[in-house]
Every structure is written in C-alpha cells, then in structure tokens.
Amino acid sequence: MVSNNNARRLLGMPYKLSRSKKNIRVSLSSKDNAAVAVQKNKATEKKTYHSVTVFYPEYVIS
Image (cartoon, rainbow, N blue to C red; front, top):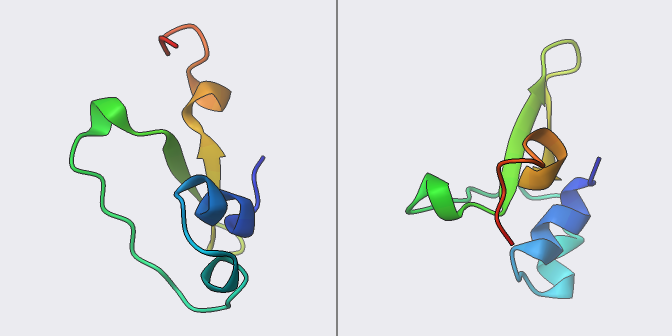
C-alpha cells in the first residue's frame, strides 16, 4: 500500500504540495496508461493510492 503522500510524489507533485493536507483531484486522460489506482475504504471513507501492479501484476506490461 502506498500512502497519499507517496502517491502524490509518484504523480510528480512538488514536495510542499505532496505534504499538504489539501484534497487534490487527479484526472487521467486514459485509464490504460494509469500508473496509480485509487481505492476507497468504505469503513473509514479514506482514499489510498496504489500502484496498478498491486492489483493487476500479470496484466501490466513494463
């Protein structure tokens, strides 16, 4: 699992923005090229960001 801060860094955000508590909206133009997947925990209503290879390792082509 990747924390929100790490996911923001994966998306190329600056250090100050990746450490902020602000909510961000990430738009990906093509789902086929998405490097980060969002998973929402129903119990805590928290979103976590993961690498796509965590969910679909055999389908991701390097």
